[in-house]
Amino acid sequence: MTTAAQAQKNGKGAPGAQEPAKPGEQSLVKHTPQSETLELKIKENTPMTVEDTIKRVNELQDNIHKREVLKDHLHMVSMLKFGEYEEKDQIILVSHTGEKYPIRSSSLSQKCADLIKNEIQTHIEEIEQQIVL
Image (tube, rainbow, N blue to C red; front, side, top):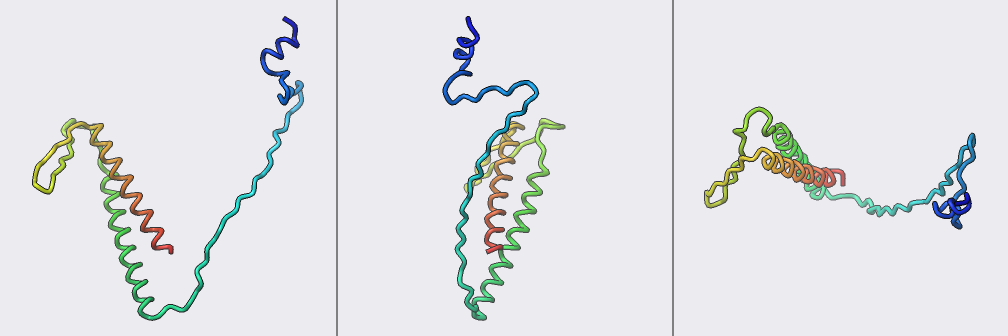
């Protein structure tokens, strides 16, 4: 098989294919920067009434308090470890009617804890967005 046939077989001689760099040369990758457009909607800053200011301050205080409570819960759930030292770990689910369902699998318990952490983190992020706005 000739070198031209080998190059054709390997796709190196195909139209639009880059020629390999010669030994001792560096090839440059051309990068064309793409611009991004960011739209901002700015609210008109009209003076707030005293009642609106009080309402906004109360909402901020409530959101800050919720955020702190959720962070405490996130810390408590993050401290849970399952299956490392003993196999007596369990999570007990209790329904509103008082029915109980224990989860004794350490891997399933860890998955439940991870799901709880993700949900709490999502709520914290939502509240932080409300605090910033």
